[in-house]
Image 1 (tube, rainbow, N blue to C red):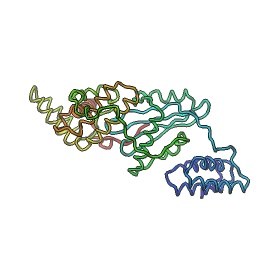
Image 2: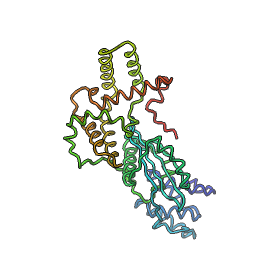
Image 3: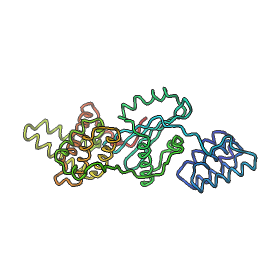
Length: 363
């Protein structure tokens, strides 16, 4: 209500952002405040909300518009059927070893301009960070995104699939009560006209014989080779304990040889998997399923999707210790290898424990 008293046109943009927050009470207060501002811009916002909000909010907006009309304040342009621009591109990165991925959307804003939003997602808690821009040229967007596409392994996906992933992320935020970042609300106008109802997403593999894949020894054994594919480039664990195990491996190599070295490494891998993998094996399984889905959605070979599915499905029925599961064993080796390389270059995560599987997203 106090914002309505501030004589600054920028207040309108802030009030429209507040309308998009996931709080019916705050949205209602915002509509009431807009209904008291004698400015066509306030009427424009109410008209847009009346055209796209839920039933209760639409009625409040119409009431505010009637009040402004009585004061001879009307919308400057009709908003019942807003002109929706097509999306320019949607990209997503494969999941990494900690369950994070990046999701990008770009949409035409004006004839020659683009808006874009880049979202940092987590498999459990949803949207963790957001950034973007409005009304930039296509060349500016290309310059801004070119390097990131390569660095983050982004792949182009169908807009409907990208929106499915977004709705799933919104569901995770709501389900875990993890608050959406403020930047998301500022930039969410890019999704005007799209259904953003929070909805969990589960991949569909009806065209596969999942039981046969889960029992295919050949495909399960091929799981170790998945780490050679770009979609698995980020699949390694980064915790202080991983560095402890990597240190043990280095020490073993200094004092062991031949059979003793192989046996010693097997013991390290067994302990690694019992301590670090077993507690999150269900998460690993889900990440593999989502990766298999992405492989299929982006037109990759059916054979690699089958290996990925076999690795995921076999985790639920694997009777031997996890360090003997080809994919899990290689995951442990890749994680320790990454730690060894970092230590060889002078970096030790144990000296920076706050950076372990860090939630912070650097732009």
